Amino acid sequence: MGSKPVRILLVALLAAGVLIPAALILTQQRAAAANMTLTILSGTADVARGSGGFARAADGQVLNAADRVRTADSGHAVVTFLDGSTIEIEPTTTITIVQATAAPSGAITLQLEQAIGRTWASVQKLLRADSKFELKTPATSATVRGTGFITDVLSDGATTVTTTDGIVEVSAQGTTVVVPAGSLTTVQPSAAPSPPGPASRPQNTLRFGLHSPAHLVVVDAFGRACGVVPAGPTLVRQIPGCLATEPGVDPQLVDLPNAPAGTYSIVIETVAPGGDFVATASAVDGAGTLSFNYSVSGGGPAGTKFGSGLAVEAGPGGALSAKGLSKLSLVERAPTRVVVMPTSPRPAASGSPDTTLFALFPRFGFTAGIEVTPPPSSSSTVTSATPSASPSATPSASPTEVVATGPTGVPPTAPPVRTPAPPPPPTSAPQPTPSPTPQPTPTPTPSPSPTPSGPTVIGGFAAPGSLLNVTGHGWSTALVTISWEDGRPLIQATTDAAGDFVVALVVPFDASVGTAHRFTASDGRLTAAGFITAYSPSISVSCTTVTAAVSVVGSGWPPSARYAIRSSMLATPLSGTVGGDGAFSTSFTPPTGVLTGDYQISASVGSLLAEPQTCTLQ
Image 1 (cartoon, one colour):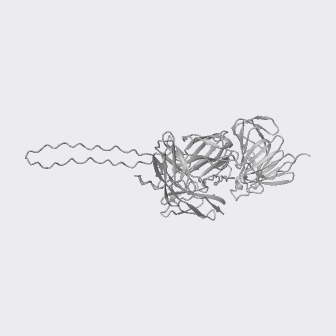
Image 2 (cartoon, one colour):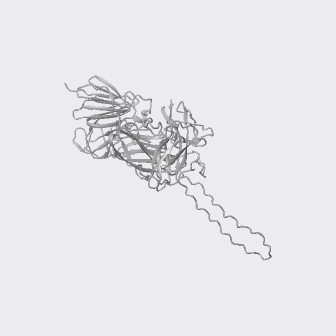
Image 3 (tube, one colour):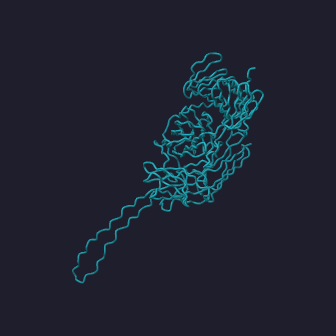
């Protein structure tokens, strides 16, 4: 008896997201099959029309129902569908597009067959019960409603389905199992699915982060992208298993589990109104231990594109290592190969990075923006809590890498050395004779030479238990130990050839909120001190309908600092000034066209972030 196909039904048991307007789909229903595009990321791919033979495919080729796509031994390709869903095709993989339609009711049907190989499907949320994304294999058939999952098909038809986010229902031989995120099931020919079990823990996770106003997209060695591209803006997940925050969430995060060794490119494009940003690259190993944390910063007017890179090596057990992000450079064209369908709804994230993944810090830390940490008592400058009035009209030709900057991005200045004035010439006593004696010319006292400023260390502000980048300048030895005010060592930093360093330390959990804590850096001969101010900010959100005002109230923020409110509802961040009591209150009305559903609202002051809150519009 022949084997029956297995049905994999992905049920997106998620809150209501973005509905696809029926009128929009009506205008596209006849062209639904033509709104599929093949993007060749690396190597080559072939396409067969219907029952015809395979022929070399062109990048950007339009696909139709009944077309078959086959990748070569080193080929990587992506098919983008009408609704923005994608399927990434790994080497030596063959798929067939069986059906692609959009009904007058608004229902979308996408049906594929996978004969052999490996695919990664990132499917938009389909809210209509009669919509589906179906993937069949020799042992399976899949209907997907908004998730990310990997399908492996061996030469004998045995199929393994691994769910990265969402929920997948896998059926075969009359048996159905539910495969939640982080789990997998295997289906042998003519057999029922195995009970779902946990997928192997990633040997590593590579995380890229961005503190807005900008969009970040990461491109791996095969040309696959993950992150947010400006068109739309659109969330793209071409790298298998990647997770990324949706547009408007700050900070933006991109997680790559089981990241292989190689060079990763990052592209950052500033958005209105422009300004400074900080990008980070970090990694943890399979045990959750932080392997590295690097950052780079830049800024410019809206629309400026910056590029950087990270060369990653893999060690025993898959642990990653790197030597830092490359210096930012201006780029004219991003190396991404992304198709944005003009009829696609604004995408909602199928899966977002777990902010608790990096156990050392619940919320990812950044060094950027407005810092209001009180300067050391020896400093002659006063830190400003207000950024420059406006960005430069043209981007800098040489963006600056974050290596060692003060709280406001200005290197600390040494206190002025006061040079004593020479003493006045001595006054001679009157002589008894009428003939005065010539006065000797006094020899002026030489002025002392200015005292060298010595090494410095700069802190900032952060929440207790979060990560903060600390920078140092002017050290003469390679190893510097950083200690808390009670003498506890926190971390050791290695200086570069110029005697500078930047290192990420975890602010102690017992740091008192609202207090400027003194910390020291020492190389065994010289010692410098800096300050870290602990805050624990929060926001509360009140919202009702799409036509009513959304209010945001904040507390526990640095007094007099500039805050920024971000959400996918807002085209540009909403900013204002924190009151002297560390609180603020603001509101905005959702713009026309915003749909009902859940929206995240986040708030930040420079590198200090509050836990995002959800606003449900009805």
